[in-house]
Amino acid sequence: MDFYIRHTWDSLPVDHKPVKIRFSPGEDGLLMQVTAPFFNDPPAPAGPPGEPFPGLWDYEVVESFFLNSETEQYLEVEVCPYGQHLILLLNGKHNAFMQQLPLSFRANIEDSTWHGEALLPWRYFPQGINKMNSYAIHGSGAGRTYESLYPVPREDLQEGQGPDFHRLEYFQDFTLQSIMGEDWVQPESDLWDLARK
Image 1 (cartoon, helix red, strand yellow):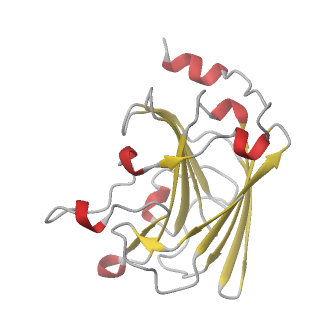
Image 2 (cartoon, one colour):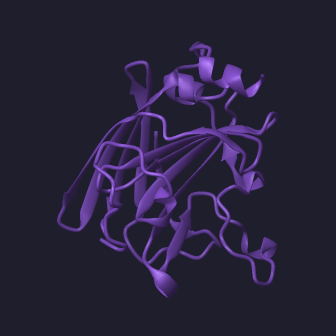
C-alpha cells in the first residue's frame, strides 16, 4: 500500500517530487519502504548508520506514526537517508515510555533520491491500530520544511501555530489488516504490556 506526502504540515503543496512510503507484509513485521528526494540538508547525524539516533527529528527524516485512537497509544518510526533511525513507543500524546529500540533498517542514496527499507517488528505496535500519519522533514534554519501526509487543514490553523506531528486528531483511518489481510491477527506485545503497568 503506497502513500505520497504531497503537502506541508499546513496544507500547502510541496514543491518537489513527493515522498513515497510503501507498507507491505514482512517477515514477522511490517515492511516500510521509503523513496524520497535527497536534500542533503542538514548534514548527516553524527551517529553510526544502522543504529538508533536520539533527536533524529532535527535532521532530514521521514516518519510514520501508527495510532490506537481510543487508548492514544502509538508507535513512531523515524528513518533518515544516512541509515540512522529512531523508534518511540508512546502511551499518550508526546509521552514516550520507550525509545531507541533496535531496527532492521538500511538506506542508500542515489544522486538526488534516497531509498530506505525498515522491518517494523509486530511487538513495537500497540494493539488496535486504527489511525496513521506520516511526515517528512528537511532543510535548515528558516528553510526547515515540515511535510505531512494528512496535514492540518488551512481553516484550522491558528495565528502563530507551528508544526506538531503529534496532532493525533488529524490522523486518518488505517489498519494493519488492510496490509496483512482481514483475517490476520496481530501478535501480542511484551513491550506494550509495560505501558499498562
